[in-house]
Length: 239
Image (tube, rainbow, N blue to C red; front, top):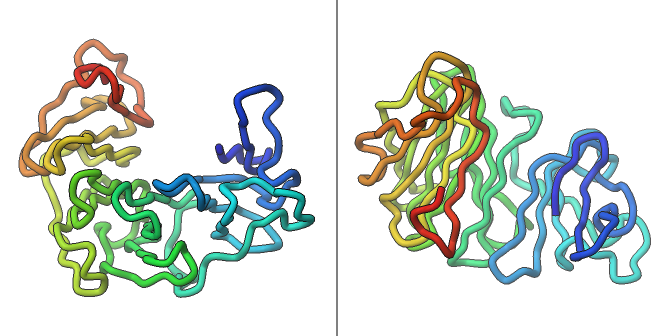
């Protein structure tokens, strides 16, 4: 599943062509999408949808013979829609707990029931005027969640499963550039990568201690904004 902006949400099934998720354009401008660890629930954020800004599908985005809205339902109960919010807010599922999913405005929202309802579990995790751009849940520890903002702020909690009782720490050591992606390694909640936008600084950073310190690993990459980073699951040293 991918969000394709003007082309809505697209579903690939292993062969061409890609088709609208569910068989029709429900989304408007397709943004972030995520699938739960069980491969059952899909989540999407959309701009201009007559249905909802945040949506979910209990059939992983497939229509299974259903007409409009093709199995998608509104999934934004509990989110304060007046919050400062990115045009494409982040979505992240919990690899350890299939019902748990996160999204962000200027604060982090958590759902523990497949996005039926949401609860804000942080205050403002920006410097005061920005929005969250990326959220990452540690695969080895569901309590560890990182959040990055458009103003370069990065925060982490080690007790996310306490919900509204979660405590957050703002991390330092990264450039004051938009954080475009946070990625947590599969074998350690302390092993985290960050990509940043802008020019004149490094663009890919690595921390082996949960963000206490960062190392610029941009190497010979061009001095251009970086939008994402991932680790090859079969070749752990390949980024």
